[in-house]
Length: 154
Image (cartoon, rainbow, N blue to C red; front, side, top):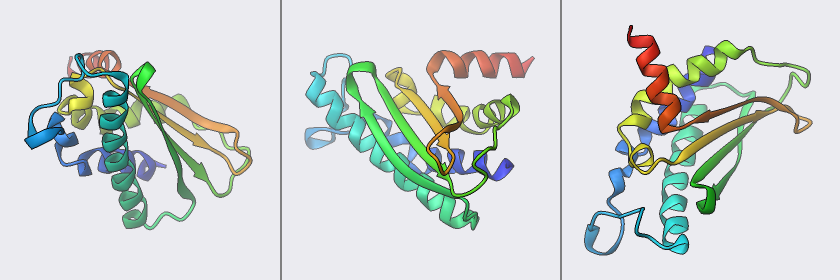
């Protein structure tokens, strides 16, 4: 299942350096902290759209037919983007914790260079089986990625 985590990294990389926070009128830098909830929602929706497009492209390019991008949820009030994917088979499968660690290893470097990291946006990746039951749920936050990269650089 190594392919699964490469797909997540590809999706994040395709965001064009995660758009690096250059949205708004005239390309002015977006100030997330000072933005209203509606402005945050709009900005997060753009980030989530690009992320989703990148992950879908990564899934297609990998040729892996059992993973399908299901939906994206944008939650401006909790500063979160949720990416939900489904496995088309293996209804009873459970992914061991090492897969979460591999996803962080593959994705944190791109995330830490992004406006999502700068603005402390939480990325939740949920993979569900064909019955909708979670197979894996993992979170990527500024804190998690810093802790992960510090622990693995020693």
